[in-house]
Figure 1 (cartoon, rainbow, N blue to C red):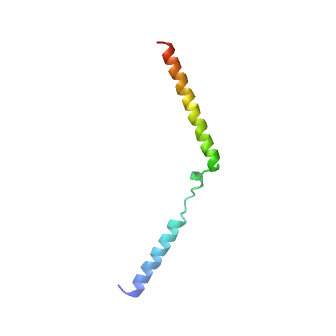
Figure 2 (cartoon, rainbow, N blue to C red):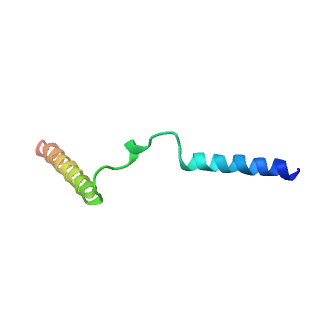
Figure 3 (spheres, rainbow, N blue to C red):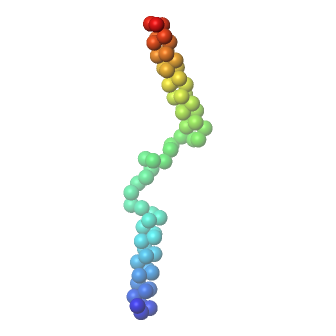
Amino acid sequence: MNKSTSRKKAIISGIGSLLAIFPSTNYDMYVPKKSDGDRIKSHWEQTGSHLRAAMGKYEQENKQK
């Protein structure tokens, strides 16, 4: 392989690397909009809701026995 061919391959490889860094797809929908604290608070609220629902179901099942 001569220098010209290897240089062309290096340039093409470099362009490919740039495209990988700057993809054409918009990934904004995957980036969280809330702060970390707000997201953690929301998760704990959901956890509490699930626990309350599970406790209510448990109470209902054990009242019938």
